[in-house]
Length: 147
Image (tube, rainbow, N blue to C red; front, side, top):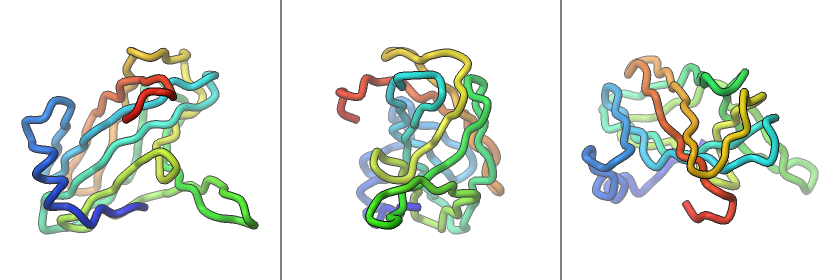
């Protein structure tokens, strides 16, 4: 899990009125997107969850109507190489964030029902222990498009 130490900056840059921001309880999800995958076997999604509250929360599950399964993965060094490792229930400390970004922790959607193209959107529902659920739209981008 990656935490953002610049939370005041994030809060200023990601105001609640920003398009695409999803709020549930004291959590906000910002900057969601996915890259267009080459096959339907898997796709990666990225976003930031900001905990604005004074209590920690836990991401307990992720589902998507376009994927057979959805989970968080992170990249960890192993024998001079990087390998993906499942992140089961990340805790979001109070006034901190969980950042999913290319090259690090990411949402992995597996066995897609269709091949998403740039311009499409994927849907994922995040369920948190305290804040409840947030349904997030992930606009699909080409790999060449900067986040």
